[in-house]
Image (cartoon, rainbow, N blue to C red; front, side):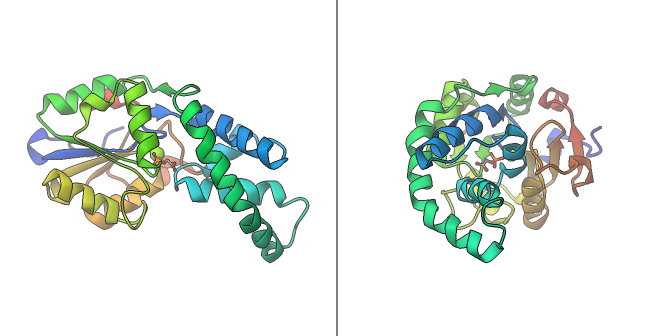
Length: 233
Ligand SMILES: O=C(O)COP(=O)(O)O
Ligand SMILES: [Mg+2]
């Protein structure tokens, strides 16, 4: 259901999230994490667990995975945090070593994404992609999936001093687009996108099929929900 009246005349640009909104990348994340965990001599983690950990950037993902896997052997939180921090540098290096070769191989563009992006471009809106994924990985994924042609800007989680849900990346992306937040539509899949949009003053529509940390996405404070980007037509 789309509550927000999506008037093209009310908008000057749109900012679209990547993981969980345009591309179903859970398979990429799981594969890279399994290669990383094998390098560390740790067991694999279930995709259903990973799904709840995606969306707050690479550092948060790696820390959450290590914390989850060490929880059985180190039940005490402070001791576990020390163990996670000790493993982190090797995990980070392994993750970044594997990601480029896996990127896009185990992921699919969601149905309706092309139609939705074409509709927004058809309204004459410049589009930016803003993700918490590292910029280089985001650019390579958009290229691999043939989506990069739609975007004048691509910013990742390493592009600014803070990541979503902080509003800073949205404000900076609006600046780069030359638009005001109130006239810039945000399309995302999680509370990170919605909280950032609310704090920045952007209208925000959420897709219902992405990753919202295991929480019902319709309970997130947003202006509307769509089950496919094709609904933007
Ligand atoms: O956390 C990530 O790496 C990706 O998250 P996003 O594309 O949904 O912002
Ligand atoms: Mg997302």
